[in-house]
Image (cartoon, rainbow, N blue to C red):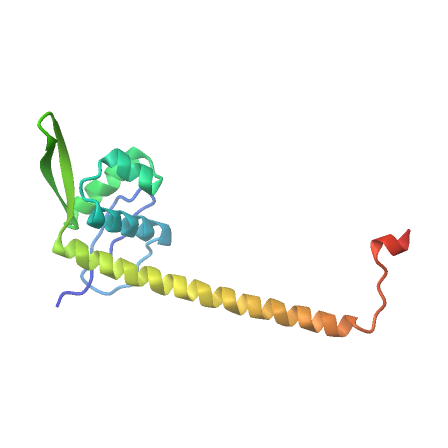
Length: 151
């Protein structure tokens, strides 16, 4: 089985590079999250227009277009024409098998990153609670005047 691809998106979601090795990337979390959000959205709603996709992802139409082209160029998406009605043409953005694998890999990376963030926050919260308990214990013998007592 092939190893999951690793995408290296710049902030503009361009300069896409692929690697079939499991190397650490310098990819920024926001960039892989953008790719993940786009792949997830297109998996469920492949007929959305670029304008609607951009609105749902809260990005500019130009950035979305650039990202779509990058994902198509590396083979994660394919595009097909279809007719919504006789007078309009539209496109379907379909995930390729490689696109589904990459979406799964990005989802796993996202979950791992969020788990690490959660654990770091939990550790910081625990340390702050210990600091407060220590301060309360050391300050219990001291007498404090409140602001209204000073007047």
